[in-house]
Amino acid sequence: MEFVILKSFTNYVDAHIILGRMKDEGIDCWLKNENTTTIMPIWTTALGGIQLMVAADQQKKATYILNTIEEERRKQISCPRCNSQNVEYINTMRKPVNWLSAGVSFLLGDYAVMPEQRYHCFSCGNEWEEKEVIE
Ligand SMILES: [Zn+2]
Image (tube, rainbow, N blue to C red; front, side, top):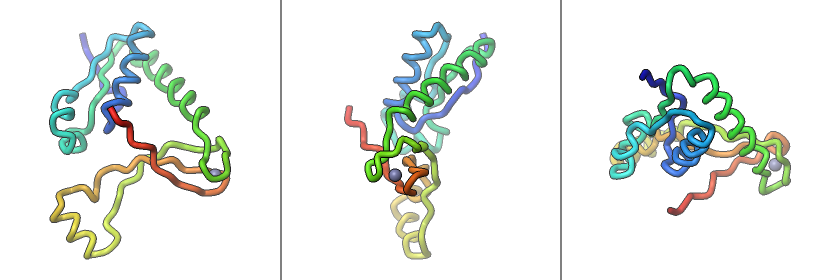
């Protein structure tokens, strides 16, 4: 059977939540890079994250389910400052601010270019990071 990448995750917990939902809906799916990224989280980005693979002939249905899940999540989140629910989960690339931080990030590895996931509030412009999920 042929499989295609539906979505990439940098977060192991997220990947498993979505995988569980897909399986509940009867989607033939699995996670690629899962073992590598659990042992060596720093490799997650280098390998393109944990990739959710779905059967090619179920891609359309899987995309629909994914959209539904993401829509549900948006509804559950509200801005901690103004309590608006007009918020979006976004990915930004953390960039070095100047040559000094660029040098520091070089010494510390490529931490500075790791994707940063945060919420943005369209009502007041507030941005905040998701709470760390502790396993
Ligand atoms: Zn707000």
